Length: 100
Image (tube, rainbow, N blue to C red; front, side):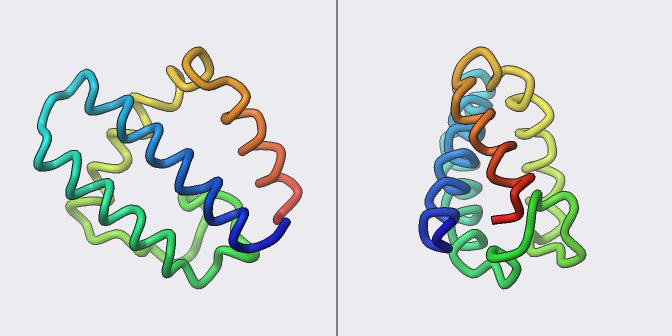
């Protein structure tokens, strides 16, 4: 998969998860801050070409505060994504397992 396509798909998935979390946990300033921060980190990811999941990466790009917050978001949104956006989740797992 083309690197820019992979980056775009990663952004779509993370944005969807953040939006899903903050639809239930209302905090618009934190929502916007985390979303912008995550998009910047995805844009600058040095391992994008070879990484599978961020949690499996040896580089931890997020600062401690936001790392804890994104974990909360993923813990909440991950299971719900199967019902809200099942094809997005399945495609993500498929492409991540292919390594590209």
